[in-house]
Amino acid sequence: MKSILNIAAVGMLIVGVADPAAAFKFSPAKTRYIAAGPSTATLNGVTLTCTGKFHVVVNKAGKGKITAVSFSGGTGCGTVGVAGLPWAFTATSASTATITNADFTSKGGPCGPANMPVSLGGGVIGYNAAFDQCSHVGLSLTTRPTLTITP
View 1 (cartoon, rainbow, N blue to C red):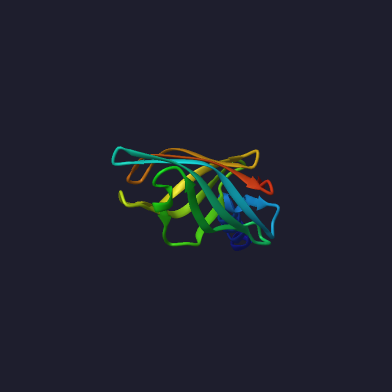
View 2 (view 1 turned 135 degrees about the vertical axis):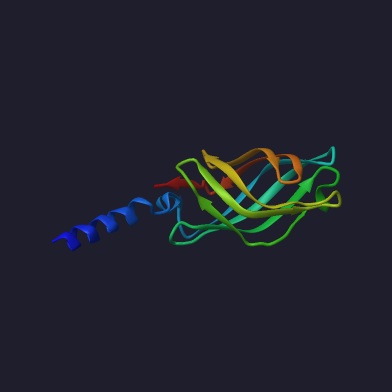
C-alpha cells in the first residue's frame, strides 16, 4: 500500500512542476497573422523610427513562430534586418509571450540574439525597454486577425 501512495505522490509532484507556460496558447489556432506598427530602436546613440511587419504562424496546438520580419519607413529602416528565423513565439501567461532568440541586424551593429518578453493585449504585441545591445527598442504591432492568448 505504501508503494501505491508513493507512486501517487510522485505523480502529483510531476504534475505540480509541469511547465506553467504550457497551459497558455495563442488563439485562434491554425492561423497566419500579420503584426504591423510603429517600431523604434536605439543603438550606439542612433534612433531609427520605422514601421515593423512580423509574419506570425500559429499551429493547431496554439504554438507560434515568427517566420518573416521587415522594416520600412524612415531613414535607415531599409538597412535593418533579422537573422535566425523562424523565431519561436510562446505564450507565457494570459497577457505575455516570449520571442525566442530574436536577432536584429543593422549597419550600426546587432541587437540579439536574445529572448524578448512581450505583452499581448487587445491584439497588440508590445515591447518598450532595452534589448540586448540596443539601449531601447519599442514595438506596438497590431495583429490581423486579432491574436489572443487563452489558458
